[in-house]
Length: 108
Image 1: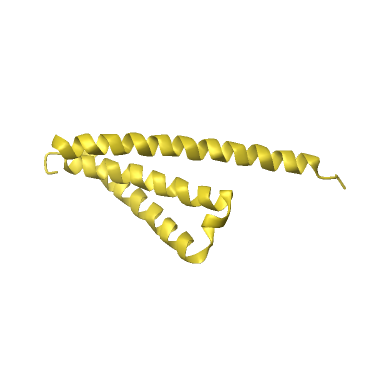
Image 2 (image 1 turned 90 degrees about the vertical axis):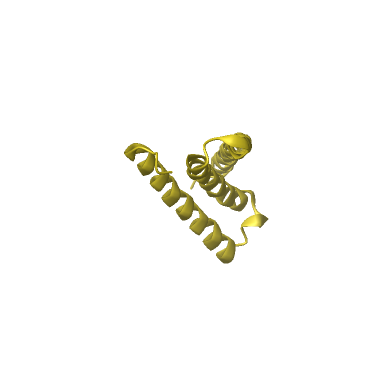
């Protein structure tokens, strides 16, 4: 990691911070809520977990940029990106459902 430029080091440090904050949210939410019981709860847990994993990928691939580990991590990154896409699609579905329910409620 000693051969990283200052901008790369800043990127790694920011990614470490973001990964840690995402992990803190995941642990706190897991301990304080029954998140697995609802679509919203699962989405609230899944998105920061996926974003944290993506940030962790940045850190790890900066430490080990070559070799088998980097190849495996690129596959993991692809899976995480696809997971984020699924979670965002789930959010769109939840948004449309909530708007539909709100529209169908009688107005006072």
